[in-house]
Image (cartoon, rainbow, N blue to C red; front, side, top):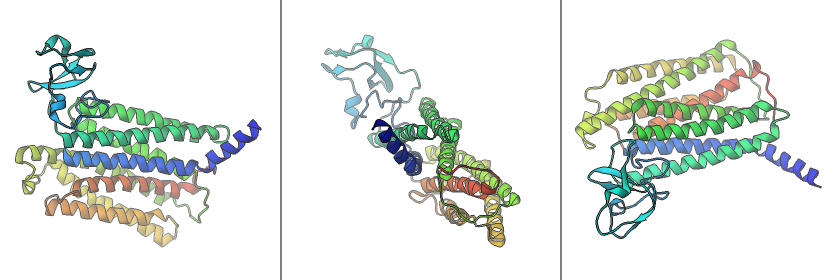
Length: 356
């Protein structure tokens, strides 16, 4: 009876594995979207510590919760803002009528001590989405164990994604501790795209639908080049975004016409590089259509690329309309995922794969 149960259970897990991978991918993209909103609203330091937020599992909603209070019970690790600095409770204790510095120690990771309830909750929601995505990857990895005997690669990649999410969480902490250092923000984004690629691979590998596609080595190599160009563009884009953030600090939130009045060299490279990206993808599309290769995802690539270019033009010439920046980043992340699936789709004739 138990053998029959586990046999049926394993069959159900296998049958739903691809849907589980799709849900996990959707959650990872949701984290990317939330991260883009964090950048748009300047909420990256909304929670100055990690993994808690001002020492709380549920962050404060008012500055009064972060001010020292007499006859108040504090737990070890809780944070207050005093004299424009963060102070951390050493142990559990109840305050007296006067502040006693013996019970507190300065926060050592950085000296950022600003509370903004809106920013705090935007960043907190971003972290919650990250936690949900992490749980989803763990469930996916557990489900992948059922494939161990017949396809070890599925199990190994699924668990690699779990460790990748753990590394990504650590990167998120280093971003906070560095007070949003540009290089670490870029690495954080690149790691998110690697996780996307691994999940896309699992989704592709578990596709049992057989489509009529032809194999063309030259087109496959060009698609790989296009994928690499997209990655470079995203990295350049994060650098441009950092420049814009610096301009916002100089000119203020309302002087949008000044943010790119004197663009950096990275901006010109990013803008010019986009022409190459468009041309390469148009060449791929032309080859696919002319040779009737059947790579259907090229239509998605062209559509996303068109909207991506439009958002870039709108940001520059119309001075960053609301939500144009996060939309630009989100579209780039979707474009990367679709392009990677296109690589797998086009490589079908070159690699042998088992159908799950």
